[in-house]
Image (cartoon, rainbow, N blue to C red; front, side, top):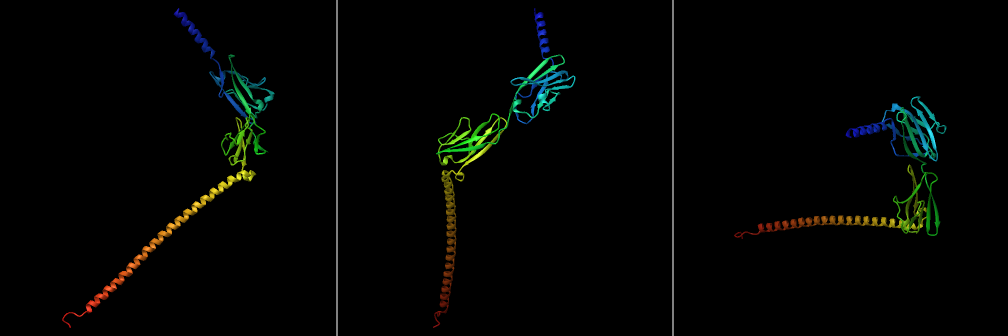
Length: 299
């Protein structure tokens, strides 16, 4: 019974080994994003076999229908190309990959490559491709209704566009002064206050591109309530100038005081020298008088 079991295992291993024979194919990526007007590189590669054993390679695309793009016969070295793809395909027989030129949004779909080897074994691999049109530069349109101001961000081109609003380079937080619509297109300022002043940016993005445009809320652009903010900045500058001036005056006062003190010390020294000279002269006179005084016994 053990012998029979070993024979059965050998047969299963042989069948399993035969199942993986032949040339297989796979994609280097699981999903690709393409850009309208550029080249899409559908990178496939042969594995588990010798590329010289490849009999044919076929490329198809699955959208609402299935279309064959190319079929290449390795033995005959002949390429069969669908008329719809004339001048748009470059095939690489060394690894079975394909380049699709000048792509459009309609080229989105699931691409399938099928390899048949000389023994008739067929292997396939697929990859999902989404082609995007880059977003165009947006435009901001302004509407005013009483105290409320609404900005609408418009972008004519772009596949799967997404809209974002930033204030002074950061994502705005919805508060009592600003509200962003659910689709991100509209920004509403609900009050006329200094808190709403600044630079607003509409950012439009998709998987392959992004564009932006700015709108400045300031007095110079007609938003007069931002003037208070300008006055605040001006007052801040005036305070700084006053502090600097007072510092300079204090420094000058300290310098002049120190100078007067030094000059005063110099004057005291001069007076002491003059007094010393007077005392010396007085002592000299006294000494001379003593010398001239008659000595005893000379009278």
